[in-house]
Length: 309
Image 1 (spheres, rainbow, N blue to C red):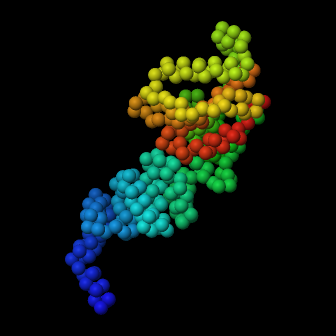
Image 2 (image 1 turned 30 degrees about the horizontal axis):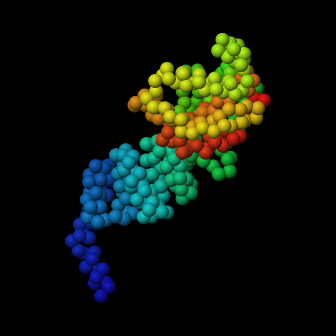
Image 3 (image 1 turned 90 degrees about the vertical axis):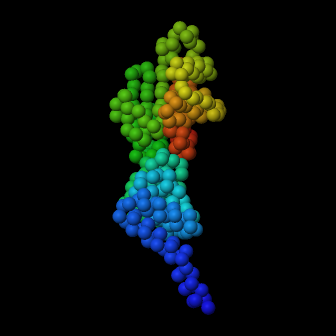
């Protein structure tokens, strides 16, 4: 009786139609006709077929069409239906990377690499993870030091550092994107600005007041004035707390900033510190959409950073 029932199910018009759709979709994908493959797969899904085979094929369709959202959707469905199928995690990793969702990329990429170490290297996923130094024991970190040994910070080994010093203001950059010359910019990184001899740089404004609390308040107002001159599209202080690092005292705040309506929104930890006659600022930033990928690294860096004594 069971064998007869199975035979009837497999030979029913609906089952035959599903098999025909899947076979046709597979042939279309193999022929690089991804639009037709997508149409046929959507028809099969509308008819009730919702299994790993369909979503695996849909992932390849998304990859062929360079449709990141479709890759994410297909990969997510495939990972739910077949958690040990590496392709589900691969499709999500590639899709999230393409749209800049680094916070969502990292767990998918790490799972893919756990399941397929060779594929992790071959596809470039491992290189992406290395750029974030996503390593539980920190072996991919590096301690960046200024040549004079005054400052040091722990950040991903693949990042680069640069120092600029005109005798009054000392700039130190450690960033994901290389800073090779003064006009270069980066989207993820840390910048330290150390202003020495504030009394000689702002004599008429400070009027001899060079203690740390006064300088912190002065620099905060100075930064706000410069920002207002730019007339940013959006600016908000999310939070702010007092902080002391060695002999330096001041505050750290989280800031969201969008310079123009069509530019990306930036999130950063902004630190303003001072000691007698000197101000030091630290900015740790990334695009807001990838902030969760860097937040903990930045907080760790801020916790361990060494500043001039």
